[in-house]
Amino acid sequence: MPDKKPEWVPLDGGDEFASRVMRGVMGGQSAAPAHITPKRRQLSVDDYVEGVLNRDRAILARAITLIESNAPAHFDVAQEVLKRLLPHTGNAIRVGITGVPGAGKSTLIESLGMHLINQGKQIAVLAVDPSSSVTHGSILGDKTRMEHLSRESDAFIRPSPTSGMLGGVARKTRETMLICEAAGFDVILIETVGTGQSEIRVRSMVDFFLLVLITGAGDELQGIKKGVVEISDAILINKADGDNKIRANAARAEYNRALHYLTSITEGWQTHAYTGSGLTGEGIPEIWQVVESFQQNTQQSGVFAARRQQQNREWLHTLVEEQLRAFFFNHPAVKNVLPEIEAAVMNGTLPATSAARDLLRVVQDE
Ligand code: GDP
Image 1: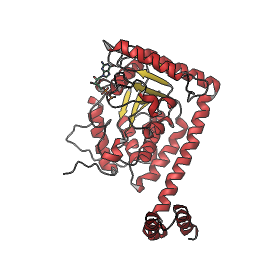
Image 2: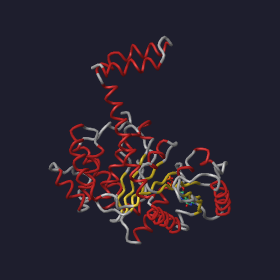
Image 3: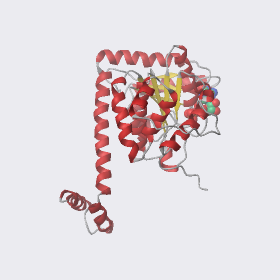
Image 4: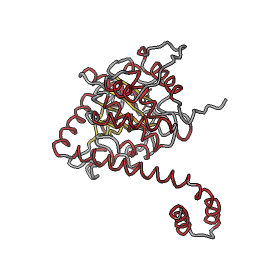
């Protein structure tokens, strides 16, 4: 049997999937034992909306599964649910967290999450995992991570959607974030690992973006070369414990010098580097203070609200572009002539520019 995940999760299967995830990731919080697949009634839009607003965890998980479904039949219901929940969204702080595998993200999120819960906050952790679209495997989602956090009733952890294009995964994460906000979570942490693309997607849906780095990768300014530093609001040099503390402090100083010459991604905010340890918890409350001071600062200046508005607009444009592309390439007339035109372009007998114009005319003339 090839280890291939399904392209989409059907609603019933999805519920089973969701309850498996809940059992695996949320420790003892599931309602049903593993061997029983409860026959559940179909939920109406009202059921979903009411359930999410009451933070009924089972319905919350089903609402997210509905959003994640690629089945056309689920799309309208999902969008209606989302529309009804929209007035209840927007009250959480949205934080993106990125770093290479092994940087210590899940340990950090566990530590930060527990700190926040102790402050009386309710947190949701979502993942955007770009690997799933390419390898059908997952860097972030497959192992049971954040074991302590997953046992907390004030935490909700949702792994990455099983598969799909990065754009689709990002859309689902964005809509899942809104559902979690409607359910009253105060802090949404969106974790990602990737090669630029997924970081940019996550940046476009969060208020604050945290880059987690480690020392000893040989090149201390690796992040700058990858372009991730430029989109970050703070850099955490992680694993600053034991013998590594001295190196971490040196890396922090080096980053702070370099950051001085970079333009910050957020108007009126200077990005700085900090040290901390997800393992010992040192520096973690301080990093959260940075997030809080960022929130206060940007809310006062209006940058916070302006960014969210801008993000909504960009989101609309992205969706239109995605749908236009799908509409175009699925159009029967385009499908008809595409192989021939592609061959001509590949052979060098037709310039790509004329070919693109010809193809667009095929749709315009319909
Ligand atoms: P992720 O892949 O970025 O989520 O990284 P993990 O949180 O799974 O951590 C990868 C490895 O680094 C594990 O073996 C952790 O125990 C270790 N680790 C994580 N955080 C720290 C830290 O703050 N200090 C030290 N010394 N090790 C850590």
